[in-house]
Image 1 (cartoon, rainbow, N blue to C red):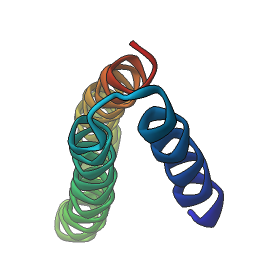
Image 2 (cartoon, one colour):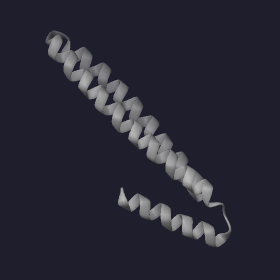
Image 3 (cartoon, rainbow, N blue to C red):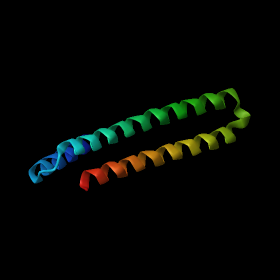
Image 4 (spheres, rainbow, N blue to C red):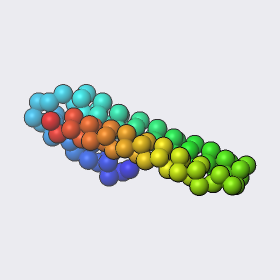
Length: 92
């Protein structure tokens, strides 16, 4: 996390030197941070719900695990897309 903040600070310094608006960089960093926090909360809730569901109905564990894995993969995909967009805004 500290490395990401250092990279954002370096990019902000370079942007200020070249005349770019630093607010755009701040917005990209803020969006990336919110996306990562949201993904972490979402994955934690998915994991907890899966564990609770399997504990309540162990015979359906395979179906529950498959559905939970699918949702987790889609959530990670959205997080990676947010990362790519934030980096594009940072370097373009």
